[in-house]
Figure 1 (cartoon, rainbow, N blue to C red):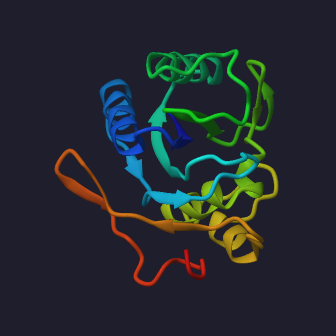
Figure 2: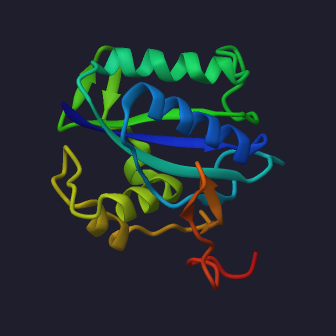
Length: 181
């Protein structure tokens, strides 16, 4: 059983879609480790609504291709079409970040996903969830990578979020590293 990490995001009815995604993950994989939920300004999008983003860790013996196919099928059930332009609103975006210590192209999927070290909305929740876990290529812990990360204009802040009757995220007071919203 490998430790799998996934990045979840939504900017269309995000509370609803993230909850439904967590339900589906739990039903298929069992126990989940869930980061805080962050609202983030869209990266690469023009005139788009903010996203809700989080990272989920779980254990599975599924191959990367099986995990990817499962994620894409769930995205499709939430209305995402493969022919939709890259930087368009989405009800659900599921990205396979890591599968254990695999690296390189496995089942046609590049692991670990580059966004781990490039996007604050992936690295901050990953660093909070698995601070001592090390990046499969550079061997640096996610907490250390986050401490070294320059978010630039990538602003995000934790939001209140409940799932299955329990609070999994509480808003920062004041906002995370972001200045005024």
